[in-house]
Image (tube, helix red, strand yellow):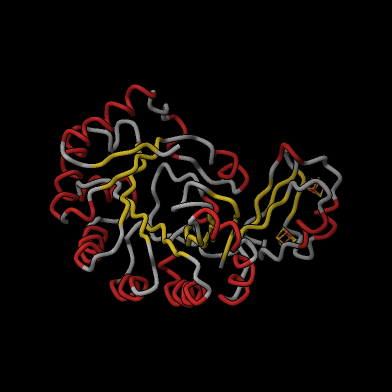
Length: 297
Ligand code: SF4
Ligand code: SF4
């Protein structure tokens, strides 16, 4: 189940890349910027600001799931996510999130940009959501990529069965690996899951020589504390010299529109993004601990 295949990305691995976004995630981070990738099911989003009130969607829906009311409303209990309303809408006010694809179809699509990968040292990145929920699919896609000399990268939250990580290790050139919070109680509080499995899988990858770039969404007042920075740095350094890079990803509220479209609550909406000075201060703390730290653009 894929939400998007996005070309020309320069932030999701080396060089120019195509990013395949998988739908479904085991975590529920309160600051998540991609709420459309949380559920593994197909969904329909309604963008009220694009709606012209023509009513074509209501007529198109065979399940009587669209009703007037402050623009239009989707009765989520009736909607089967067939997407016919989105087909009927001339204005792009209804968005389908989630499409079933095979690994071969996905490969055919990503292959089209091979010349960009070749000229930039880029490749294909599996992201999400959590791509390791679909480990067999990702491995098949990456096998096809490798046969075509295309570089492979996974962006993962690390909360996956060990077998999935083992499989991926054999076909993945780079792991972009989230380390959100070191305290297990706080990790559970803010993400819905504890971090034991995440840290264990990171250690496993480091011990097996994987190329890892850790990433940390920097959430004001949640994980930008001295305690979390120190514990994250200590954990990374305990993994050996091959796993001592971390990239900070400053908090932003860009996902708010999608929360509204899906009628979901954005818990972190009230958080104020860190200032550039504060982000730089966190970077310097990591560097002082001996960790190679950069800031995501
Ligand atoms: S078809 Fe599109 S523009 Fe027309 S009422 Fe439905 S959502 Fe709004
Ligand atoms: S996705 Fe299908 S069932 Fe859901 S509102 Fe649109 S047309 Fe109706």
